[in-house]
Image (cartoon, rainbow, N blue to C red):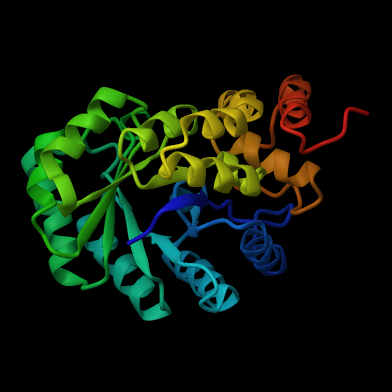
Length: 294
């Protein structure tokens, strides 16, 4: 249903942390122009944890309006409350999103049966296509491949963003689920290899600042051209690493601000990138050809 480079887009904010509609619309146009294959609105990179429900739905509406059918919009609607996840997913469907991305419930550590029933409940309550999202490094909750296999039997659960970076895990999910579920990498550092193993694309942080290169890399990998994909990916390797020198999305929001695309706004408890990391991230941007070496 979806493929290629799908940007986990940041949510632009003013310096006081309020939403910046103008910059958000500008970013949507930027990604359309640069060939990004889909936009994830208000995913975890979009600071979903610190937006209230009204703001969350507003960002989805703005993104859908600005995309205007030019590019698919996948709305982040996960929550650690099942009822909240249902409400956000329903809001996204009403706003016209093409699908939803639902992170595993964080902090409360549900069992595998709890995860199955959580995602089943959301899927049954709202008919929109849904993509699961497993990122145990941030949620303290790991959805195992056997649970994914069970969920793949639900018709409107169409994919999973697997962000462990474990290629063997990705291969197991592909073997268990076959054509019933699309796999997407959620780890830029291993995304190329994951696609070459059978994933349909990458839900990417790096694509925020290198959208054309990420599109081209994913396109080459999807075509099975490992040599070309590696050639495109090589200058991005430092970005894949250094955009996580502090908790995401701190470094990537700073990087986009350096490009003149957004202001420095970020919402507490997240803070602007520490000065000691400015040179690290800037150098990675230079090596990727995003900034000049001046």
